Amino acid sequence: MESNNRNDMPAFMDTDLDPYTLVHDIVSNWWVIILGAIAGALLTYVVVSSRYVPEYTTQATFVVSSRGDANAYSNLSSANTMAKTFEKILKSNIMEKKICEKLKVEELDADIHAKVLEGTNMLVLSVTADTPKDSIDIIRTVMDNYSSVSLYTVGSAVMDVLEEPKVPYTPDNPLDAGGQAKKGGLVAGALVLILLGLFSYMKNTIKQENEIEKKLDARSLGAISYEWKYKTIRDIFRRKKKAILVDDPVASFRFVESYKKLAAKVEYRMAKNEQKVLVVTSVSENEGKSTVAANLAITLAEQSKRVLLVDGDIRRPSQFLIFGMEPKEENELGEYLRGNGSLADVMVPCTRKHMLFMGGKNCYSSSTEMLNSESFFKLMTACRKFVDYVIIDTPPAGIIGDAQIFAHCADAVMIVAKQNYMLAEDINEVMDAFRDKEGKVLGVVLNGVRSFSGLVDSPVGHYYGKYSKYGRYGNYGRSKGM
Image (cartoon, rainbow, N blue to C red; front, side, top):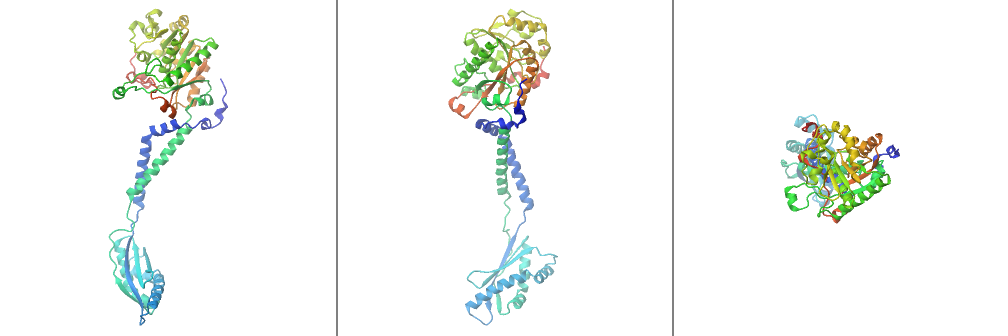
C-alpha cells in the first residue's frame, strides 16, 4: 500500500478554496443560518429584557437672583455659583440622609444634578430614578429643603421656582427589545454563515479534480461535469427523474466530452496492463456510480469496442431503469446464480450497438451469499471470452461487501467519488480494502463537478442515479428476499 505523508498534516492544508462548493454548502444549510439567527434574536431579547432598568427623569426650573441687587451680571454669577455649590450639597451625606428619612429608605438610588442654562440665570434641577414615584418624591423633598440649603451655601442668592416638576410617565430609555433582537439575529446569522464557510473549507472532501491526487492514494481519472436531471419545464413540474446518457440528444457538450476523456484514460490504463474487467463502485450511495458505469460502457461501445455491462447490484438494480429495459425472469442474473438458466439467457443484447447487458430488475437480499458461489466465478471467467471490456456496476463498497467479491474476479477497480460528498479518509479506507485483497485500483473519477463557470457554459447537468422507487441501502434489511 502506498505511503502517504499527507496524513501527518492537517487535512485542510491540502484543500483549495473552491467558491462553488463554499457557496453551495452555505446555501444548502440555509435552515441552519435561519435557526442560528432566530436563536440569536431570542437570546438577545431575553438578555436585553432581563437586564433592562427603566430610568425616569423629572425637572424643576429655578430663577436665581442676588438679594437687593438687580444687576444682571450679579444674577448670572450667583446662578453659576449656586449651581456648583448646590450640586455638591445635593450629593452630600446630609442631604442624602434627609431625603432617605423623608422617603423612609435606607439608600438613595437616584441621580441628582443641577445646572445653569447657558447665558441665563435659570437653574435646572433634575432627578433620575428607577420609578416615576421615586423621581417625583425625591425632587419634591429637595425643593422642600432648598431654601435652607441655599441659605447655607450662598447667603445672598435667592431661588424662585419658575417651573414645577411633573410626574414622568415614560422612561428616558424606552425598552427596544425588538430592535435589539433584530440586531442580535443578524449578528448570529452572520456568525453561523462564517462558521459554515469555515467548516466547508476545512471539510476534507474532494472539491476539485486537482485534489484527487493530493488527498487520495490513487490516480485521477478525470472529472465528470454536473448534468441537470430536469431537462425540460415539463420535467420540472412533473419532477421526472431520468438518467442522462452521453448519447442523449439533450446531453451537454461538456458532459459528453468528460466521458470521452474518462473512457480514453480507462482504455489506455487497462490496455497497458492487459486488463479487461473493471469494477465501478463508490464509498456510499448516491454518488452516481451507476450512471458513470452506464455512460462509460456506452462511450467505449461507440468506439466499436465490444462491451458487457453487468449490473452487479442485485439487491437494488438500477441499470434496467437507466436503459429503459424490461428483463424477463429467465434473464435475471440472480436466477442464474441460483442455478436457473444458462449463459445465453443471462447475457442479453442491449439497445446500443456493440453492447451486451447482464443484470435484472428483481431484488435479492442474499446477494453476498449468491456471489460467493462457484457459478459466479465461472460466469465472470466466461464473460472475458466474448467482449473487449466488462464493466461491472456494484453496490457501494463502503456499505456492502459485494464490490470486494466482484473485485476478486476483476482486473481493476474504479472509484466514483461525488464532488464534496465523502471524506477523503473514507475513500482511502475503501481503496485500502481493495488493495488488501490484491485488487488493483485503477483510479478515482470525480463525479458531478459543478463550478460557476460551468453554470455559465452549460445549462444542463448531471443525474446521480438515485431511484427512490427502489429505496436506499439503509433499507436493505427490510427488502423482500427472493
